[in-house]
Length: 243
Image (cartoon, rainbow, N blue to C red; front, top):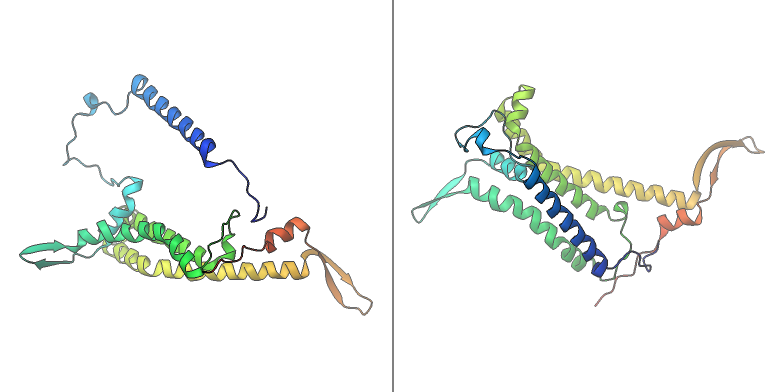
């Protein structure tokens, strides 16, 4: 594969047709479940009572990171114009998800502006070839993962027999330091993998075969890269288009 090659089906009509077929399948399965199967019958369990909560209940997976943000946020509040502004709810509800989703939405435009790379990329970059982008992605995963895990800090504290306050502070520290540490570790790993690729291109692949030369020295036989292997490691990226 090369950057100048385009493969795959177009968005319209191929992807649209697949999406429509998937929609019809889901609608059919939901209709089948609603017709044939009995799901959570209210006449057996009775009406919902908010005061009746089972022990160790946890939020749904898509609400876990918001629950974690609420649990980690200190009880900050202030009074303005006679009204109490509760930052312990405002920040977890708006700032925590806002950082994540706004960052995801704006990052492609910010990177294009900073790198001035306006070329069309038909071939995806390998993670090791863009260390900062990969590091930022891993940092975002760690950020989300810490918040999501913190949503069950009470269950973690109960099962591991640790203080609930201790788990809360552990997650607070991990939320601040975890993304930074993850970014730096990932960036350095990507740079190390780039160096490994350069050595492979220059010297070839180690075969494990040791031979003795006429002068008595021992060297390892290295196999040159095939054309396909070299193309993966040394495919030139499109040149940036500057204005």
